[in-house]
Image 1 (cartoon, rainbow, N blue to C red):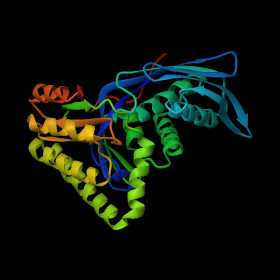
Image 2 (image 1 turned 180 degrees about the vertical axis):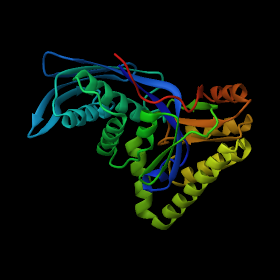
Image 3 (image 1 turned 90 degrees about the vertical axis):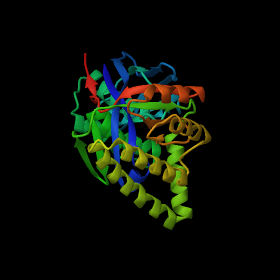
Image 4 (image 1 turned 30 degrees about the vertical axis):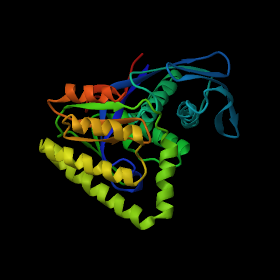
Length: 322
């Protein structure tokens, strides 16, 4: 059994894909994957609340592939690609059954793709008798997200693998321990956040308005630095202000949605110090920073048809057990 936590971006999503700084942290909600080797070449996945997939394990040249896939292929594409790359890396593949359960919804903007990718790689390799290091798991997970999405940052997979707080600038990834361990309020819109599609939307803005795009990225990078400093210094009011500014620029990049705006507005009106989308956007979830006021803000989110979740941040990363 392998499990990896969800994560949120406190600051810097989307801009991090293009080299700017991002600050992410894990949340106390996990995705678990249990693997079992089969006696045949079938590949079967069952994911509670998501769907099922069936295929056949085979090789094309020196590459392992899962072919003849049927079922919820698109929803489970991170799982199949992660398994293929894991088989390639360890140099062997077998029929495999994967059972997946999660404490949080898929495509919710809470890092479900990174969590299931990391947990799948760890579970698949362990099932075949190989124990990979966290570094190996995170690199394979990054390769998986690149293959599925076309563009990716290491933030999500590093958070899911190592836990705690993650600061990323370009290719440099740093684990930071001196942030306060708090709880944060999450509001789930109930609308799937499709990460590859949202990354494509942002890419299109880069192509059509490159000057505006570059300026927005630079501002988001600076907001992230200022917001991280404020949070470290426990200046929660200032951190909330930078969260709000970050949301303004995510709107400019086209990453928001009416559902997210509704929950963000409700949270701020209820007294949250800051609120913004987290992850890809276009649906999924928002976060609200409301120390000492979480119950009131949670009620406001639920009154706008959002699902409110209060979660600890900075929790442990990948866990593997028998």
